[in-house]
Image 1 (cartoon, one colour):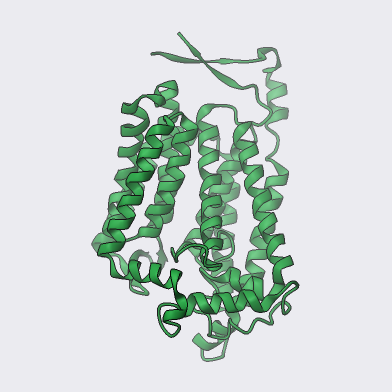
Image 2: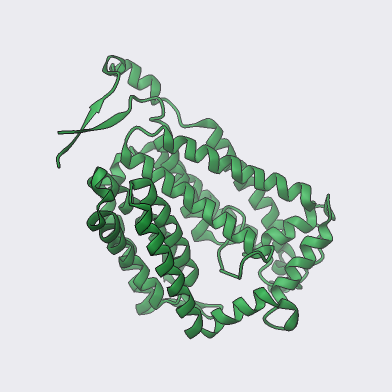
Length: 391
């Protein structure tokens, strides 16, 4: 079935009008992202300065903030650069980006470095980064490209299930070999949302979700550390000195914060009681220092940014841009929900960081670059829609 696109309201599509509509990015979304970044860096400093002093022999309290700040600058540069590129460029580069993502994941298996017992990093010219962050972006770009290619035929099993599924497996299989369950779970969730937006039949998505759940159960059964995480989630009090220690310390931090918190910088749990207090569990320190009120304000900030991102996706000019923006926003949304669920013990530990807050240079730089892609799409929010027409 051939597909073609027709401009609606063609009389508005004069060069002068188009230049006016493409002048700037969506300011509310930009402001929300910058606010998340600024608050995230401030809270990272508060959560990490005790660990930084300990790790540097009490010579520096800003070790982690400095590294994160450099990556934030790189990310802001990427965000600005990507915001200036036309979104359709990513459609043309989709297969190249996908191939790069696979190559980077395979490079981890070949000569990756182990950090905290996990082999998920590679070192290039002295710079260490995590290829799975690139892989997430490459999956989203390719699925958006396939959505554009399939059109309404995405509802057909051959395209909507096998086509999307094989594209995802190209990235998920190397991640499984790395034993990177958190990335697999995250990308699977984002992929399902994108398939739904593309038009894949809900019955096939439900069947896929059931298969994924079965995979997770089998994976946990064979991976001892994953099973320990589930046990610690259900009964942390049974092993407070080992598997249940981290989640208990997190809950202590959240509970001691009360309504208004102990005050900025006054957390007690960050003094080497709560492991990874500046990374996966930074939200627990936020709750301790800023209390329920401060934590809710940050959740509102995330919610507003996510809602505005979906607003941009709905007003995108074409199918590819809509699905691309929706996928990138969903990536942030799922990471946020999973992280908050783990920190509050609503979910078992996943190792997924809180976007813009948790320490991790690769994730921060890539997330900001992805926000630049959404800002690029927002430049077209007043453009006449490209509507599919059957012929």
